Picture (cartoon, rainbow, N blue to C red):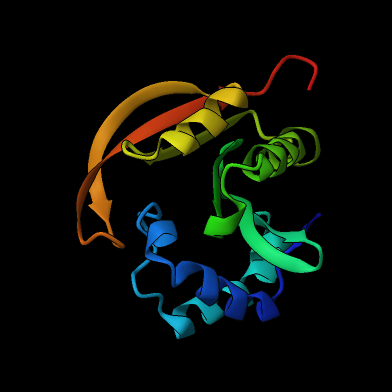
Length: 165
């Protein structure tokens, strides 16, 4: 089930991001996670939603948050798709299912014309999710990874809203 995130989700997010295998794939998240920074970030999600700056969804499975999928950096009819999940939910299709729903939301409800996304070059699972959704690779760049404390190769992707969507 997808639902808008709420400030109370911050504690669960800290739990998920306390797993190095999860956070090492998140270029903008520190490791170990900063509990106060995550709480401030989740506290701002409602304002972002109301302002049309970002739409962040918790993914709940049997009443427990297992991850987040979002569209942020919204500007000029474009946005950035992102997602992360607890390790025990990897490989079960949840990322593809949740991301597909949020891509549809971004195009049909928000009216975006184009989405960007990306992943660390060593994250083949995330590449598979984006390709399944119809994203096309658009180049790789070296960029800083806060979690890893070094530069990584980041593969970028783009998806243009289909005609009639």
